[in-house]
Amino acid sequence: MARGTMMTALISETYFVYRRNLKTWLAVPANVISPLFISGLLFVIFGATFERSISLGGFGTQDYRAFLVAWIIVQVVVFSGADSGFSLLTDIMSGYFDKLLLAPINRFSILFGSLLVSGTRALLQALVVVFLALAMGVDFQGGVLGILAMLALAVVFGLVWSCLGIMIALKTRNAQVTQTSGVLFFPFIFLTTAFMPEDQLSGWFKVAVKINPVTYVMEAMRAIVVDGWDWPTILTGVWVALLMMTVLLMATTWLYRRQTA
Image 1 (cartoon, one colour):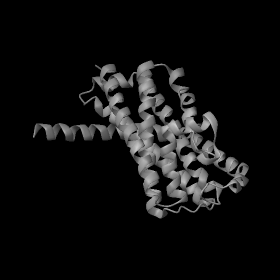
Image 2 (tube, rainbow, N blue to C red):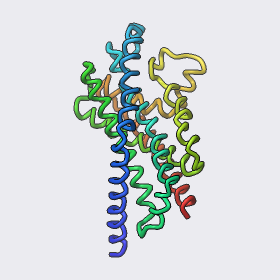
Image 3 (cartoon, rainbow, N blue to C red):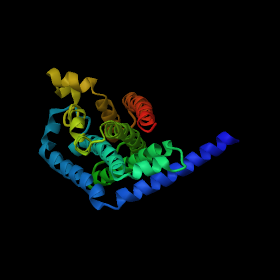
């Protein structure tokens, strides 16, 4: 009974922390619009610039924008991880974080509330990219269910990078380091099959692409858009995302416990 009461209290406290953090994020339009504007602009520019490269073959589609959708979603989700860390650091520097720790609530509700906001952000941002792609005439071969599956994968992957952002914020407690941590994520985004299929790559770049876990998550999303239900590719991406989330969530929880002890 006591355990059930504690769990109910944790869920309730997590919800209130989540609601407060979500309102804080939505209260600053630049936080919402800026990453979406940049990603939308890149979608349009790269879609037009590399459109003719589809003639090289191996893309699995005749629409280069369909090939590009997965990369745009991954990019938005990855960069939101650095923003999640900076949001937590803002609370730390303002003293609000310490007030929460002193409050009669489970301190893990603070962490879980922050992670839930990160998942919500990933969902909303990925959804906007999907709407933009549909508006530009991209045909999602996976249909509505495929879009939902891709959004779910984006949420899981968003939690992965949010864990990284939060860990950087907790460990450094430095605004400049946390704010610029997105630069550290660049190689993971671009050392992938972002613009060309693996068959068109060569040398060290192809090796880097194959050992980069982001590639497999991106390929899973792309398979839903381009091929429909290519289960081997999709399941590989799902398992990679779930494994990364499990490991980083455990690491974040451990670091959070140490930093708030």
